[in-house]
Length: 265
Picture 1 (cartoon, rainbow, N blue to C red):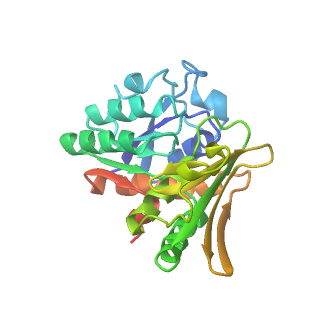
Picture 2 (picture 1 turned 180 degrees about the vertical axis):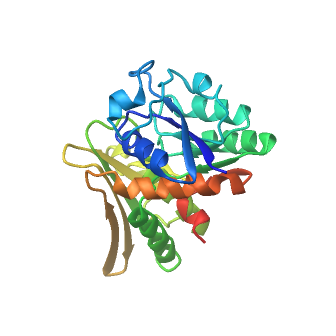
Picture 3 (picture 1 turned 30 degrees about the vertical axis):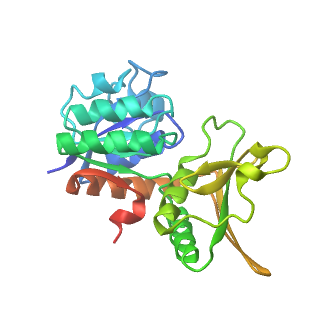
């Protein structure tokens, strides 16, 4: 039996190739597509001959009128929470690829998912190298007591810190909080120059042309320094395989699973 999938953000950067990948997978069936800008049009008209002749919906609520097993969320930070809670209320499992959710948002989503007995997988980044950075950084945090995070993205990215940075800070907080020689509140000069505190880690967000998504965890010790960095290219291939994996596994969980690596082991 194939798994029925709806993709919100179907005409976006990741959404387009993801629609094609889902429609071509033998164990998955693309039953819904959401895009406000292309609502009412055929997905085939937007993506070309390989795409299914599926009418694009204006909203998640409209798309989920068709029986659906999994909603994949790749839209915008301003809409993601509403879309996810809408799906959960209808008993639909969710895979979240959109950034912008806070820890409080994720706690609310987890509660709703538990109450409705559905699974939600949220990953700040679905690429394997981003996952490895997270793992290596958590390992380093067990031995090095001071670190900060630098979050790079394009000048067009509205939300900050990125989902990748938020997830890394959260996972590092599970190891512990870094030591700070001079507390941020005792900074002489502009306190904001020390970045924002996210789950105990200082995070600095840079938004400039030339970047897609990059994340760097920098650890400092006496007379030594360790940098662990992930850089994304312009293609979407690294995100597609991770998202497909999450789609196939989300029904096995109840409540929120935060981080792709949680479903790999």
